[in-house]
Image (tube, rainbow, N blue to C red; front, side, top):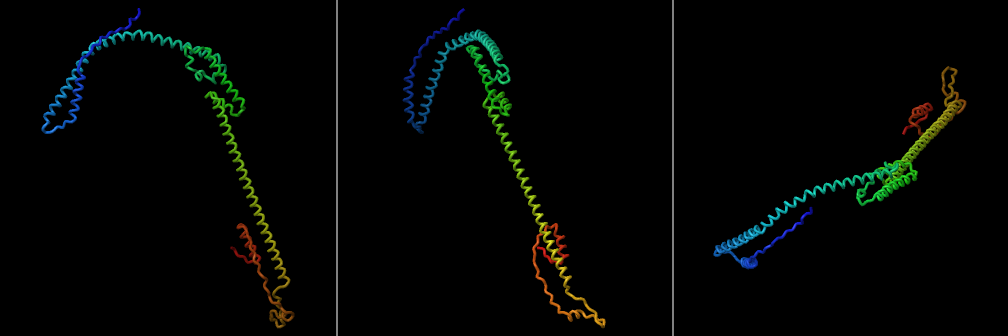
Length: 326
């Protein structure tokens, strides 16, 4: 049975009034009242005029409400009846709408299954590299999107992944594993290459730092060795000077002893016939004694390590050599 179309005939009437004349009189009164000044003499007249104006306003407002109510009565009756009838449409709408929605859901489920079959046929051994959810496009579920177009797009996505893998492997980088991991996670060849480059730079920086550290350690060892050799050389030179000084002092000591043995300062005292001793008498009778002349002193500055100082001082004392410490 076909639905009967709605047909409404409204007989619109007219309202006769003199609002135009009322408007003109009110405007004239308003203009007149603008110049009114209430005084002690006119206060009663002012109150009367105000009461009349309010009364006229209330009368017009009440007339408006009365007319509106009379005019709205047939409309309100029509509105009530129309809403009752409109509600009758809801049942068939709900029935058909639910069926259409269920049909659309079933069609999408079948399309999704078809998309899964197309994906399974194209994935090969690359499923872990490109899961379906990463490339799934809801537009494939549309009834106007063909299976052929879906297959082409899925196969193209796998070809792109294969090409990216070959590109990373062709770089022969020691960080290929890390690059492939990024590619698998993000699907971005650029991000994978950047990861490999970053790791390469990090390794180069670490190697450079280690090389610099080794060079610094080598320089420290060489400097330490140089100082050790200089210290040993200095000790040897100091020891050599001490030995030279000892040899000089020993030589001077021997020469002094020899001179004293060859020419003693005092001759032997002889005994007289009377048994008394006359010192130097025999000598004065045989030869003239030369006066004693002191040898000139020589000042020598010697630097000795503190560990040899006491031994050196003892040596000087044994040889009657005066010394002063600074």
